[in-house]
Image 1 (cartoon, rainbow, N blue to C red):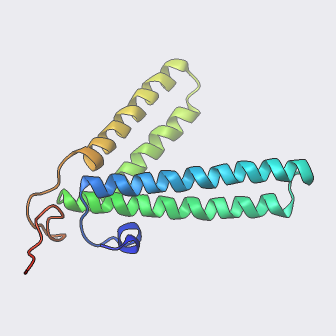
Image 2: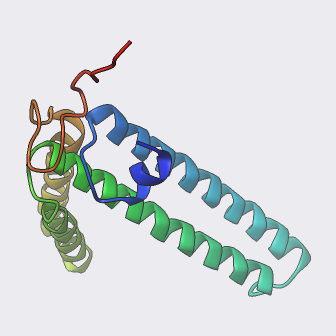
Length: 156
């Protein structure tokens, strides 16, 4: 599986190691982009007034990079779900529940409500992490493709 297929194609299955590899690549790209934005903002504010074309360009680049990272992370999650013989549509549940709990947490004015929703958010995050990053996939082929951990038949 080449890097483009790994990061951008919904087809197939990936094992836990490849899933974590994609997530680490995404994290590294995000950190580099964010650092460049901060450096650019520092240079921009030191030389130019805030709101210059340089700062707008860096925001656009950061937004595009973030969208690509969200896409590749979603693709990796779907492939992990496929490896577990589950529909990729479960990613909508993961994203939806996380978003709803986060929005409720932001709008709740009471500290006890924020605490309860924070615990709920943590529980959802732990569930997603265990489901995608820790549990072994289906042994052998399934409806989404061959087992990524199965030994390859090589003819010598």
